[in-house]
Length: 302
Image 1: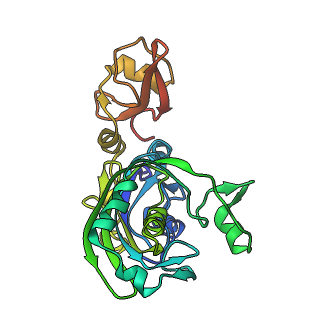
Image 2: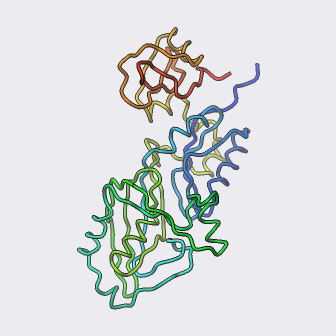
Image 3: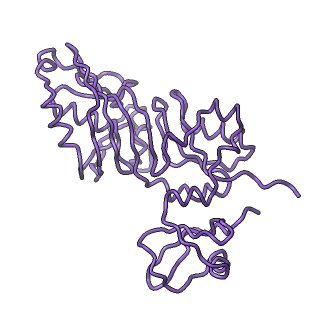
């Protein structure tokens, strides 16, 4: 009998200079399968946690994209750029007297104003679509792009270190944000609030939902040790992200065929249904008087 195709989540520590697609392409080679996708893009300049789905685990990615995320970043105060990061052309530099007027207290006030439930205008070079085209494509084509503000949640915006300079300040921060929040835009808006402009010079994602750097492996580690040994199985991957319910064999069989079950009093939201043999059968949701499969995995690999 041929061995089962690899499947599970692969948590990669993405290197700087690589696109998320580059990492997916490398994982396809390492796992010897085309069936690889990712949950949430990282910019090429950024490093850190990139969650990949391999095999049937690609189906889980849709339900993980909306997870909250955590980052370590360096914000530069004193200059604004086209891209809101260090890779873009400088738009304006603050005069030295404006930078000299910065204080830790003013910085703390600007950070506090960007914490909690906010409305944020995404970076003009984001992947947000404007009339069917990505904003960054329009900017690169020389168009002026103005995006609408959208709600975002900044659960934490902590200043870790400050390095004042005559022309610019460098500020190391930790942020925990809802999906769709742009850390570059936080840097931009903090600088704007302080009257000196701001942009991001470094970004490292340390967590996507429950998957942190402690689970992540570099591409070098995956090349050396093999990716298969670092795959997080479907049941373990789902159990880390969702509450777990263990149906009996008959309930698992019915869920595996996409059938609804009578209500059980499950918690609101998605729940991982793991069968008596420890296989993930489905993600389910109890609503409208029934337990309904939101995603059917069907148990063990074929």
